[in-house]
Length: 615
Image 1: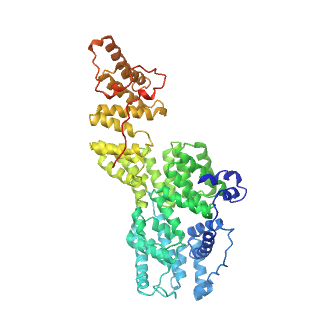
Image 2: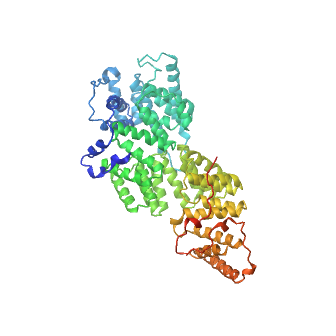
Image 3: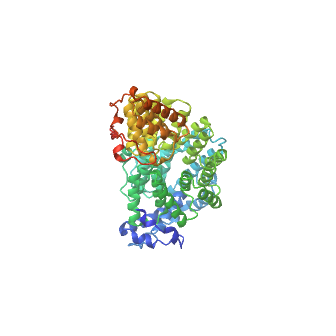
């Protein structure tokens, strides 16, 4: 799918690059879809701008650039004249809107207090909401201390007023569009849904937001608010949503939030093939999908292409900085940090990038300062809460880490990193029952992530639930062991906990086979040590000698390996005292010794052990 992006960074002659090569590689565009999309985007952008919904206006405008060459089959209908729409309230609206644009929300609300038209009424209520949010954020002294004293003031007042309007709206016929008191359009319904969501009235919020989307499916902000309330795929399937092309973008976004990355990627690919291949939003979402799939190189490549297309775009650069951090690309992360500071010093993404930069340099206190700065700018910024929790873990401040992770879950309960971080924190505190709960939550969100399964298995092991631990390690291996330790944990479980040394030996040998390219890791040394002892106990002296020699390559097992070699030499000098235990599965191996410097043939391997997981 990404073949269409090849060479894009070398062809950025214009603001959006030379996309001729990419267009030629993509299938034929869906002309009908693009025509319909452009008409909808033109109308919705104007409506969002009139209401001060700047983020959605920006998002719609970026999509419009992608279809700028599409010629409309039918002429675009003229937007309703504001003077006719507002009547005597036109001057009050213009004055209030100018205050709103300058973020003087109280003044905006004051001059629209007695307005009755739907547009002016929305501006009044929305200004009151933003004013309350701004005051609450300004009162934050410590980011780790929750500040909910305002929740009972502005939100409850707005809730009372909007719920009264909603009741009147529900009791009247929806065909009336006169702007009388109590009537609600799509925008007021969206605002009511936001207030309900902030008051944790989730079910009502979902119903109201769905109504708002039926009236205006082009409001991307309403789709995002609804997506934040979706807990699983089953809930998503029960929603009654409008049959509109925007629903595809909503589904892709929600799939991505639910870690259903393949489904999300399929939708984004189809939209790019339909003619939206220039969309920087979709490109960024595709990069995030690859990030979630741990395809780090592909994600980094797409972010570099995004930089070539729009070098001043800061959206999603926090994710890009995470990728550079994981790959330990210090120079690239340093360049990115300097660039974003010059573009927007007081953006949350900038603070996050700089925080990751200092974290990679092991300057954890400075990293925490920048994550705190990001949270002062936006207390609901999920990435900063999670990353700050990681920094406190590095600083051994478990209490602060727990607070950060809990705040991240408050912002988004689908953030598996926060659940996993809580599990790791309680693991340090030696509270395995707590670990088990949090690792379970993380594993539900990432069912095929071997890291979650290994952590869950280790928690079961500490609680002496051997069978559950065994199933977790088996599944971790079957889904693709990222860290390469599931077999090792399983081997230790069989040999030390379940008393099945034979099966443990087979698993250790299988682990060594699968990690031959890992180098001299201490885990391999421990595996050789166990196998040497096991072979010695079964009087398989050639194999014991071979494994003991391997032990001497590792600092941690060198002395034990030398001791086993002495024992083997002693037994060879007294062969009359030795009895082969042919009951061992290791006895089935070919007896001639294998040179230590050479590779063993397939015939010298242990018999295969079935490692399929069945739930």
